[in-house]
Length: 211
Image 1: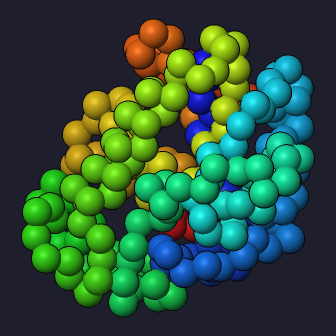
Image 2: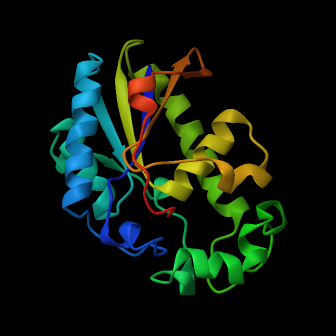
């Protein structure tokens, strides 16, 4: 089976470079256009989505609807692929806060197994729930045909957590992973083995707010 992970389209807070986290900010018009264009990219590659797994946040759900044309009532909504919680930082300027709160962002591998600071989710928490979700997908392989394609609709920081698991990346590289709005990351799961697939026209995304 094939997994197509994708970040949601642009929101006003993305455009203004504000932390979103669990705050339920809707897509803006640009984000909706990005999602429709992402759907065309899938169609042009001959990819038909069998099932959608989505974060519960509306910006993710609307993106997935626009990409696939599948009604949200058919989605499997999963809290494990919700965006990272940024607590008191949600709604604040990304660049200013990142410079001020260096201990939360410069060394992710050190912000683990501790009490959350300012309500910001720890990296072991988000990487752990992303890993649980991937294990769940692997277990679901038996429910699908080998050629089936599923869409996993998520967010910037959660995508980094998913990719950290899938690629076996070091946690110190967490924020170095580039994730554009409506950018796809593609993987094949075959007999429990996972491999990344390079599809350049899908892997392109638009630049946008970090989170």
